[in-house]
Image 1 (cartoon, one colour):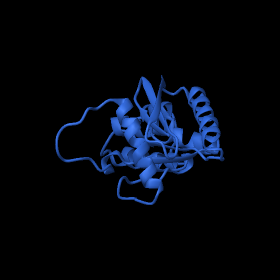
Image 2 (cartoon, one colour):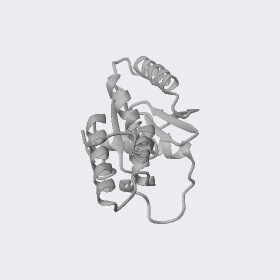
Image 3 (tube, one colour):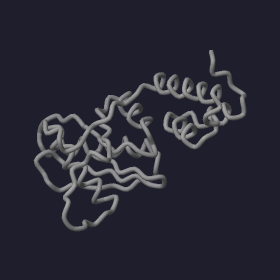
Length: 182
């Protein structure tokens, strides 16, 4: 299964092993309960169709939503692969249609190829733990405020915190309401 994530909606595409056609579902962004429901129903249908147990593998491109979704899905036992969007092999000639649905369907083919062992089609990204990301962000925010090279409220700092789900913590840092040295 592949996800194409945007701020307002997610497109999830599921392809049964051995079938080139992917079915796509559009859901509201961050609607994890609906996503899990689609995952479960797709898995059940595919197992029935193939008459054997399957293990769902889900992928998406790292971006605005960061890694919180991967951590959540892995905590629920779903193997999750996060790809670097700049690493996808793309045809050099001509223009191609670009929609979230087509991107999600294409990503299912990329995932299938990647899982079969061809790591040249895309590069996966290491998913940091919440703790390591929080520590890294706090330490760089501490260094930047002490050296006066960049304010703690810079867009990059807020972006790092938002990706980990700690957006309000970045604002607290900017106001000096939270001690990062501990």
